[in-house]
Amino acid sequence: MTKLKMLTGAVTALLAASTLAACGSTSASDSGGGTTITLGIMTPLTGPAASSFGQKTIDAAKARIELANASHEIPGVTLKLVSEDEGTSPQTSLAALQRLHEQDHADIVLAAGAFFYGSYRYAVQNKIAVVGDCIDGPECADPNNKTIFATFGSSDNNFPNYQGLPEFFKSKGGTTYCGVGYNFPSTIANGKAMSGSVQAAGMPTPFVDFSFDPGSANFSTMALSIKNAQCDVVGTQMQVADSLSLFTALKGAGVELKASFVQGGYGQELLDDPAGLAAAQGLYMAAGYTPASLKTPGVTRMMDALRTYAGWSKPYPSVSHEWGWFTADTAVTGLIAAAKENDTSPAGFVSALRKVTHDTHGGLTCPVNYSTFGDTQQQFPGNCTYMVKVTGNELVSATGDAPIQIKAIPGTKNG
Image (tube, rainbow, N blue to C red; front, side, top):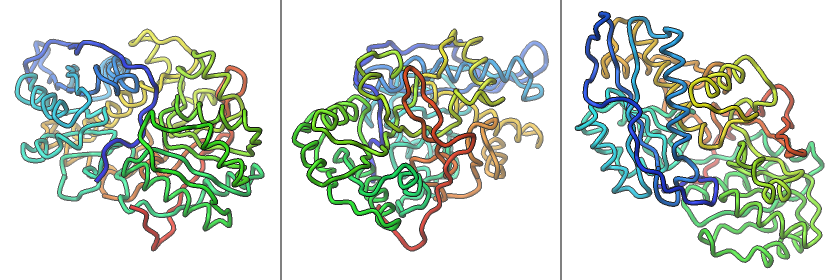
């Protein structure tokens, strides 16, 4: 059904596919009598989507894997990582998955990209254990795809209305909502779900536009339409660069907002871009996992690992780090469970992870249940989201120490 959900960034990265560890052996005994398990990651390293993933996604997965090895999280098991360039199409995704399976002999695949919808059938046919970010399509919600896991929870492809975010908007003084996004099936469905949700909370939606492709919008005209609609809350389902262009146009038109919803903007890249940071001042953005500014034990653990094993010393993680860290973390969780059952084979991993019903990714997300299908709202990991406010050169939590709980409204559907 869906193609791309939300990709962030605007600069095409031209990075060559790299291998972080020697390819070849699958789960085999090493000289110390333990077992080596190969994780293979596929993520866009070339093409337009690379700016939202790229080498930092691989670096984050490597950091999580090295942390697991250093702390002996999986008794008797050493992990290694190999990587392939997923590219930016269903065809290149399939080619990358085939290389990981047939040439690199990966035991578990991390589908940390945006085009797995083009290769998941091959994974199912070959019973390949896959942990995916699942932002691109409906494959992770299909109970027939038992070897595929959604690291943030199996999405509900009905896209129901929900409670949680509308109440946040109203708490900031919001009264009227306008929604804008690309003409992609999933962004349209997400946009309809948001519109239906705010309407259910008593907020009218006089202007909604999900009719355009990336790069084709006239944001000056759109800003005037939003001004005429008298909206004081605006939500976007676009690349961050386009979202910031819209909000800049809104400021130029004299629109004063009480709140906003920007998907995919949380990350160090925004703070490192002077023009983007200036345009984003005062905006509210979604953060699906605990913001680094809260400095919780889970945040400290992740940031320490990124610094130690990926050389990342900045205050916030990169947008691209999210995909690699959390897919690798889910794989580690499954292997810990499999080791307790004395079977860390791919089949043992699948069986064990399907029994895990409460995974908070080290305290970074709301609990994810891997035993079910279709129980998570697609853009909200574990059915929760933090909101951060761009304040100066910081991304400050606007929801305090606890995230917003997203609760589906039964009987509603926008898919």
